[in-house]
Length: 566
Image (cartoon, rainbow, N blue to C red; front, side):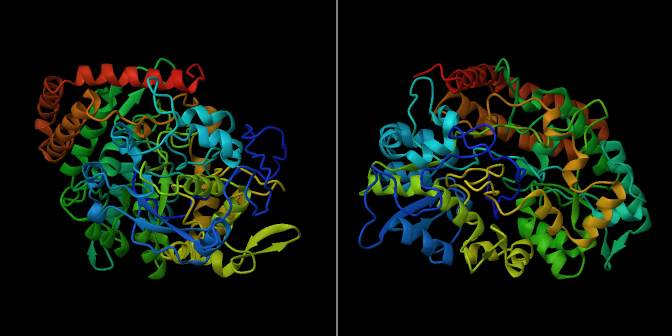
């Protein structure tokens, strides 16, 4: 999905100490390097002088590769990254690369990788992984098949992006409500849309204004690409669906349906239409800009959102800076009704699909590969997660401990990770994941369960204590209660360029974004007719063909990941 601003924290349990096979199920990664910086046998020697490799990241932002962590990476690899990113959020960069034949050395293209493969713009990595990819092989272990491209072309073109062994200690993308609402209403249980609406109604009646401005019970951001994450996705979460992007997937059979055809989506948007009619939805939810949206949240007058944490980080920091911690947000396991099970903690396994590729025009392909392989080493994983010993952390009783000022900065300063490099190079590079432990049995990420608890604001701890919980995830159905995904997450699939899926889905997305927005803002008496008209449009646009093709792709993924394809 889109830009991840911040460190992927979360963790595992400190007692998993079985170091048997590489990439083992318990989250340990067998690394021949341990904590040493020497390259593995078969790799090229580090160049005498640093070599600059150009790197385009679809989720990148303006940044120079000169922070303290970046300097250490260069010392270890001999590589300096010259980083580029899509200016103004443009999604035309990859097509322009292909048209010109001018490629950077390393490319994180997200879902556009297929276009680069078809154009011959990136190289296969299979032989490099086999011959000199010891760190990558150790990191991926039996998950290596999830990197493969397709049934027809089961080669590996990319590595990285998501942790191989992840365990959530936080949620994101759910409905979120101000802590003060929970306190003021006596800590109510809020697990259904009805209870959520009732809480907002009670609070806004008591406090029609906050800090001299009109209280906004619920605000969304449906004016740009974020429509997908604040309008479309919350509907699925409320209906008990996991996050599969625009799809509803049976992870056992592979049957895949364009999600807005599911009846639960109709029910959710009918509820949202009612919220709008009652004046509980910010009237600018589909017109205001991102900056205006963040400004509203930062003012403290927005009682609830349905958004990803990374999208509202700036507002959280602003509220803390302004002394309004009680107006930061708590995630809620809200669904359409008690019969639905929230999937916020679902285990998708290693997602595969997206990653960093090496271009066919790269002058130093082996050095580029060795750089990516080193990023999968234990030394690199400790560096990118924890920073530099003596500067960002110290060893206490044999364990890494962040300096207090560093920990505080990571939790309160939106720019600290970017300026220091601590946590900045986790995504989209190869990473072990939040549940992994190093060769000494220590968490590879900075946040254990205990650390997440310590990082909470005082008001968060107060509210959690009233509910008898330690973490917000305690409110949600636990991972072991949910079915594990066999296909990863469908939004992470590499869609073949120019395929029926790509063409028809774009057509369907344009229809749903426009028509659902109209339906939400319409008079409630018009909602059903508008929804039915949208379904007809989707049928005429070829949604049945779309479902058929996407089902075939999902079933191919299931077969590919099973190891049946060589």
